[in-house]
Image (cartoon, rainbow, N blue to C red; front, side):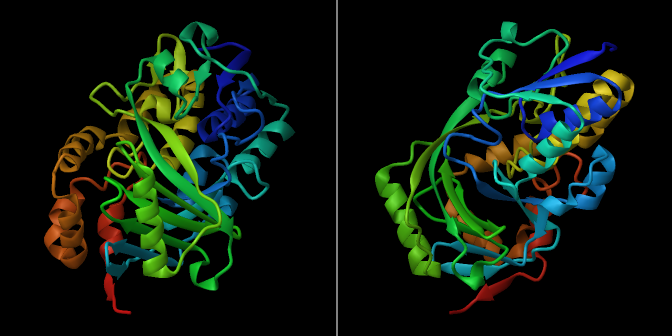
Length: 360
């Protein structure tokens, strides 16, 4: 592909990484984003998220030093009903999303603007016809973006809360909670003096479920928040056709191209790596296709196995079994924990190394 001007739809991580790299290659880049301002996803941001990642290796691949944005996890704990387990935090990092100056969004945005890239906010795209020919599509979890590209999706529900760090026990912490109130789990991530908690489920979450989750946090760790908000989010239904780098002559990147872990739904890593691949789609298409295939080599196996495991009716007993007997469960974990796009590691097996039972 060759042209002097490229439009990118979406000012998230993949869109900004693609824009920065395309600008370096001499293209005139403009970015459209539906949000009113940077990183504003309703009231959901600012938020803190955790991911397995090697910041130096990712920085080397994408050509942008993103290591200042990532904080190593110091404390990693999982609570399954009344049982507590301390896990191995190696290779787990915290990263802030949103519009605060400490977020990775702001970090990348400032680089892009300094290079002369024009970013247009409040520019909503609802249909494929609204997206220019030869554009980069980086619309993330946006429902309209998924519909425009033809990506099947589910509507997840949940609740979130945040507050300023007020207890040193939680500094740079990653904690998870599992209970009957959710088919999935809730997690607390803490970085940059901000505590962020999210609980979600693939089915409608009731007010009673949310209250039960609040009790679980307070009874297990003495954790409370002054304000809670309900959340409804769009998640892609990852199927056999989910991975696609092109839609006609448009380049796909980030969530919309399928570069998301189908088991743990880790998306930060894939968003950054796929942003670079989007640039390569214009400058070295053969390498872009090779990298896209290589980084997603385990996607389909993990997609099938993890989908089967989610359908198992005894979810909480399985969580107890995994935490109590990690060696017994290692073969199963290895089948689902190596599909973070471009990450060469086993995030679930690694977190179980040195796992200890917490006795209050």
